Image 1 (cartoon, each protein chain N blue to C red):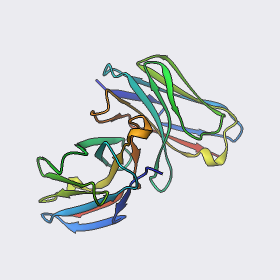
Image 2: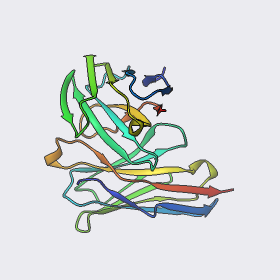
Image 3: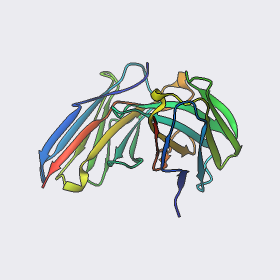
Image 4: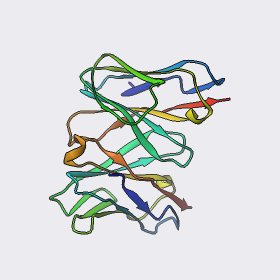
Length: 112
Length: 112
C-alpha cells in the first residue's frame, strides 16, 4: 500500500535536545506532509514538501526528502516539553487521486 | 471559531445499535474526509467527498454510510455497530492537493 512507515515508533529525549523522526514509503509520490497529534486531539498540519524539493524549514522544524530512497525525515531542534506528541507522515501518489495516506506515527516524549 | 467541528466527542453504545457522527467545516474547503484511528494510532482513510460527491470509498463495510448534504457537511452513519468499530473517528477537510488537511478533534466511539 502507499502507507508510510515512521521510525522509530517511540522516542524519548531531554528538553533542549534535537529529535529526528524518519518516514519511509513504497511508491513514487507527488507530495509528503508531516502532522503532529497531541494526546486526545486531532492532527495538526506542520509542513508539506513536494517531490521536487529536498528540504524545507518552518521555525524549529526541518524536513528533508530523498525520493531516491523513498524516505523523509523530520528534525525538531531545541525540543520543548510542549513538543511531546505523535508525529505522522502522509504521502500521496498520482495513482491515488492526490489522496494522502498516513503512516503509523512516532510517539515523541520530551522530558523537562 | 472552530474550523472543523464534529459531534459528539464521545459516543458509547451497545452492539447492534445505529449511530451517526456529524461534521461541519467553516473553511470553505471543497474536500472532506472521514478517517478511522485504531488503538495503535493507525489512521485509515474511509471516505473522501469533493463538493458533495463521493470520490474515495476505501474498503469499508457497507454498514458505514457517509452523507454530504452540502460541501460544508459530511456526516457518517453506522448501522448495526460491532465491537470492532470501536475507535476514534476523525473528520478532515482540505482545499487542493498542496494544502494540508484540517482535522476535527475526533469522536471516540466505544461499542460495548
